[in-house]
Image (cartoon, rainbow, N blue to C red; front, side):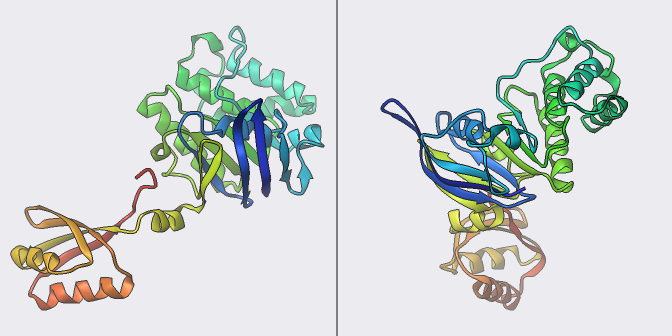
Length: 298
């Protein structure tokens, strides 16, 4: 499910919420839409989902203009806002059956769809419990289950982990990984990028309505962080290792803990190979020489 965002602009009087935002989300991507509060994330999510209209520009979902064809677009997407309502007096199962009917799923398949979503969102033990008695984390799962009722290829989730404890956040991450593995296109927003990096494939960074950066996660890690972080462990020659690292202009911020070193490295793969060779030539016996993945949040 390809999503094209072209020259998108949204204003509220003299206030600019989105300013010429352009990027394309490839089919099957899990996009982290990140930025500080007030960056324009929610505004962008609403326009993509057809719940808001841009001042100018357009959004195409598989070449379908969302603003001109919102009803048609809604058939292929699911959207969960940061503030969403649930029917507290219904059980989880009743709630999902209600929306299965609302989405015109044939009567003979509604029970099957509801049960599948109960299992997918790990709600089996709460399926016949009223929603008003559920924790915030479980309510979030019910909201996501509702979003998946029509099995949409495109899923938008606005700040889904806000207010959740670490365990509930981890459960959500695992669910997002499952959805990504199924080939669905996900757009997940947060003002805390570290929550998204463990499962996203692409990142779009917004600030004050402008697109600051967009691309594949691994490419952005390299682009945004000139230095790469390394860790080495030695079984013999720790002093020699420290001396060798200190002598290299490409090595910065050396930290040592007994026979383990971490450092920032400003060099290409050839320079990396030279450093490894220099350590070995100096008589250092290495058991580990690994690059650590950088964090975009930095």
